[in-house]
Amino acid sequence: MSDTKAEAPLLLLSSSPHIASPVGGRVIMAWVLAAIAPAAIFGVALFGIPALLNIVVSIAAAEFAEFAFRKITKQELRNGDLSAAVTGLLLALIIPPGLPLWMTALGSIFAIVVAKEFFGGLGANVFNPALIGRAFLLMSFPAAATTWQNPSFFGAVDAVGAATPLRIIKSGGSLSVLGDSYGAIVKTLFLGTHAGSIGESSIVLILLGFAVLLLKKIIDWRAPVVMTATVFAFSFLLGRDPLAAILSGGVVFGAVFMATDYVSAPVTATGKLIFGFGAGLITVLIRQWGNYPEGVSYGILIMNAATPFLNRLIQKKYGWVQPRKPAAADAAKAGAK
Image (cartoon, rainbow, N blue to C red; front, side, top):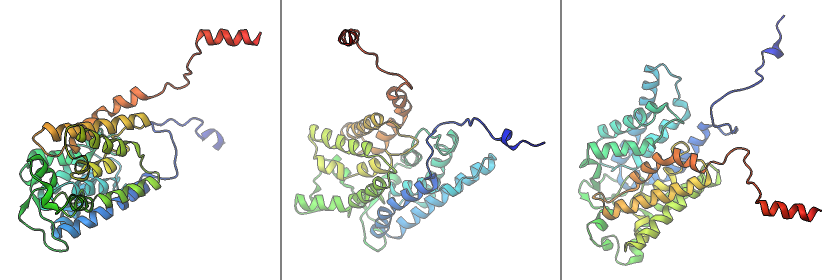
């Protein structure tokens, strides 16, 4: 006789995480895509068709790379969870709008296969895949990956190379080319109507995405806020314009969408604070003394390497209770008598 009660599992064994939630990964990824969308749409409006093509190619290459790798290695297909689409979109938004499409596709494939699938796929990657893709493009095609164009609203991108605000600061130039007054310069940096990556420049739209993710409780505020504050503070201490330091380049974008990655960032509250501080400090050090004007990508990637250590260092011992001091224990006993 078949005993269905005996066949039911009495003990379920699974790997971490052990926190169950009705909100699945697909829903989370969908909200992340929605939060990034305003910055992406603004990038297309700012830089035209080349930006749109780079976004489409990057997402398509990421989805194809994940499908092909898992198909070839006979693993479960995961294209429906939208994680590859998030990686492809993030990579597209941190590259120049005029980057050749085949380079974009190559960077996206590298991000998915090498930085994600080689480590075991979604949830197992040590480093942020999109940042690894960008680092790969910077090393392989440094000229193309650092060639920027002037914005051209709702039209073809200006093919003439332009200096980004970070490049101007690095070369000792004046940001006055962005506006007649300091207020006008700050406004230009905040709105993002200047040369730069497709989706990194508009601070106001990135903050809008930050607010959405916070309200939906998808990300935590600690790493983004501490990273941005650290860049502001150390830029000031080193004699740089602290406001321009956080409004130019990819500080805010990286802090909101990269330093909050569920997989490659710490899981504890204290770990997130240390992660944000370290990423911000490394970013400033690279900007100050490195040859490369930007440092956000490497700041976050280096702290990604420290994430396993931070998780072990800060993690509380299960069931551990701080022992009472002997003197306090004796006094308590005496009082009881």
